[in-house]
Amino acid sequence: MLSRILGCLLFTAVLVLAGCGSGTGPECSSANCNGCCSGGVCQGGSSTSACGAGGSACSACGSGQSCSAGRCSSGGCSTATCNGCCSGGVCQSGTATDSCGSGGAACTACGTGQTCTAGTCSTAGCGAGNCAGCCLGGACQAGSTASACGAGGSACSTCLTNQICKTDQACGVDPNSSWRVQPTSATITATNNGASWDADGSGPDPYIAMTCPSASGPISSSTAAIQDTWNPTWTTGGCVTKASALLAQPWVFQAVDQDLVSDDPICQTSQLQFTEANFAAGGWSGPGLGGLQTLTVELQPQ
Image (cartoon, rainbow, N blue to C red; front, side, top):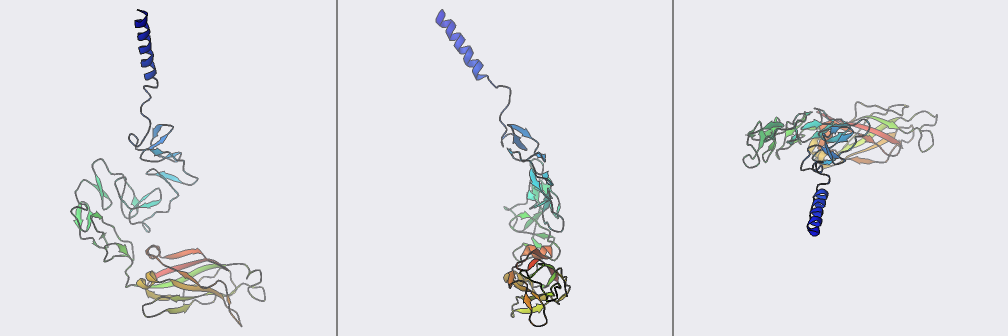
C-alpha cells in the first residue's frame, strides 16, 4: 500500500513539473512572427523602438531614422532616383512580395497568394517559366522598351529620364548619346600648404583642366580661371564625348591656380570613372584631394 501511495505522489510531481510554464505560448521565432522578436514576444516590427521583420530580433532605429518594412532608414529615395519602390527612404527593387512597387512610389506588401509583377501585386501567372521578356500587369512583355524593360520573366522596369532599354534588356544610358562633362563648383583650401595662394595674400584663381576619353582619342578642355576665390563656380569649359567612352574609361582632371608667371597645381592629376548611377543622377559630387577639398561635376546630355 505504501509503495502504491508513493508511486502516485511521484507521478503527480512529474505532471506538475511537466506543466511548469504552460500557458505562456511558443517562443517568438520566424515560424510564428511576421514582425520582430523582443524578449521572446512578437512585435509589429514597424516602430522605431522595435523595428524588424521575419521573426528577427527587434532593432531600435537611430536618431532621424524611420522604420518601414522592418528596416531602419534615413531616407533619400524618390521618383528621380529609383526605378523600383521606396521603403523607409531606401530604394528597393520593387519585385518582392513584401516590397512591391515601381517609379519611386511607396512600396506595398502583396496579399496572400499574390506575386509582385512589374511593381504591381497580382495573382496572374507571368513569370520566368513562360516569359522571355518581362512581366507587366500579369502579362508578358517584349521587355525592350523604356516603359517596360526587362528579361527572364522579371518585373518590367520603367527607365528613368535619359535612359533607354539597352540591348541586354536593362535600363541605362544610351551608349551612343553625347554628354558634356562640366565641372560646376569646388572648394579650395585656405592656404597652399601654409602659404598664400597669391603673393598679395588674395585667394587663388582656380580652373579645372581635363581630358575626356573618346574613341578617336583624348579630348582636352579647360574651364575659365575664376579670380581670387576659394569657392569657384563654372558654367562652361567642359568636354563633350559619348556615354560609351565615359563608361569605359575614366575622366582625367586637375585643379590649377592660374598665376602670371607659372600656374600652381591645386591638386595632382586625378581620375574619375563614371557609372550608370552617375548618369542617372546627372553627375558626381564628392571630396577632392590636396588643395581641392570638394568638386561637383555635372553630366549634361547634348
